[in-house]
Length: 409
Image (cartoon, rainbow, N blue to C red; front, side, top):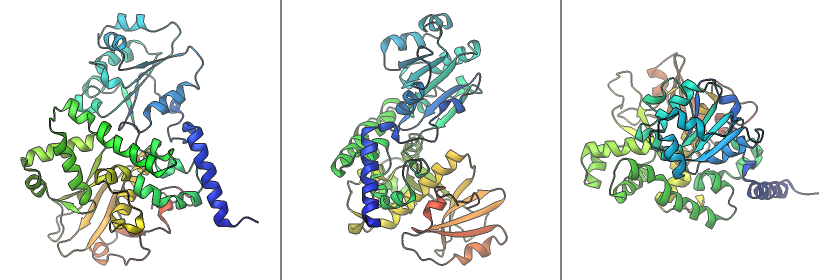
């Protein structure tokens, strides 16, 4: 008889092999894009580079009848010439007869693509249009005003625990928790079995891809300054960030630092969390916290891939990971909430506050299993506020993985 521990190991080994042999085995929440396509709307797949947008698009197109779609690469000169022309006649002539779906990958490379797609949406009502793009779309303003009222945008982020639950059992997810906390969840990282390979992919991602949009479209000349800013944010994850302090450390103008932070957020590298306050004098609300969309990227920035047993920042890794996994859960399920942290001047704190439907849901993240309710939080907002401890016992429920996960958590 095989022991349960050995069985779990064999299960993980089998799953790992499957992930390597078939990259599409990682099912994404939006796997069937046909459910997201609306008439007279272009579908935009937007997200950080290497997050799986192209794979998602090509896998979907494989389900369509042969000859019913046209897939183009935004980097091709001929396509750039056609779709940047803003000529409806020219675009019509470029599409093969019988095509019902136009798919443009890396469409941010095509000048004036938003205006061209607007023409097609307005005049080709039977044509389904799908575009993939990195943050350059937003930074360059290509899909802003031109496609107002004519687009559906899906954010494709690193793989969520909810999505992995379609491939892995809860037991397997728990077994791989240390791996997620250190190496994150970019698709290529998940499908690479050896740790040296994961490190190499993440370092290449940080050095070659993530900052590319900022450097190309915002004319930021010194990438070292941006990288140093990311390092400072990584070392302050879960703590309040002072823009003045960042400005002094980087020898940059306060407004420049603020602009860089905004760019990093638009590029899906970091996410800002503001402080919650209803004007109680003891509450801190002017400062913000910054979290990384992916733990692997955060660790690559600091060049620290040490095992959890060797790290003093496990609590910060845990908080960053839970914060972003919860965000991905809400995004995928369409659960809208205002999100904050809560802290008083005397040190009382709630890690995450979700304001939904007139109620305040407070969550405390502890890698270790015990913590007492924050009485000051419950007393400050009686009848409105709740408090929940999220630890290794119940975090899968919190992330919407297990069958008994409740929507009001």
